[in-house]
Image (cartoon, rainbow, N blue to C red):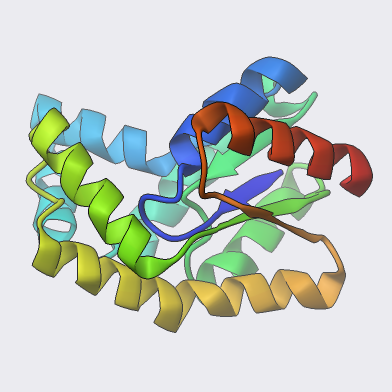
Length: 187
């Protein structure tokens, strides 16, 4: 499974809940990048430049990381990707990775939300978490990137008939219940 949506739509929160409820491994590229930034690894230092500007981390770095992770044994019974693929090039790479590991993507869960609601959410999160990558200029830039690049990803999966859309606005519990209901229909 893949969870996709604009920045601030609740992907990480819902990914954790879905992972727990369905007993599948959640794989978040954002968490991996932030961990590397915090530990100041070479990957983290490179990723931080892009993240602070609101840009995507280059495909070469991201693809290698996902390829290694999806080769692990714990994904054989199911997995949930959060934050990947974000571009059409990454969709092609993910198709190759899945084929090489004899895995299939069954559903793409798209969380939807209004941009202004997302800006408000992300500014609030920035204050609570002290995240340098969440100021209004960067947030709007990331939303623009999402609309320009990631929506093409959704279109590719819509062509395959595996996209399930869920409204990401509401309390965390409300969104989780909508997600679980939609996944029962999608499965």
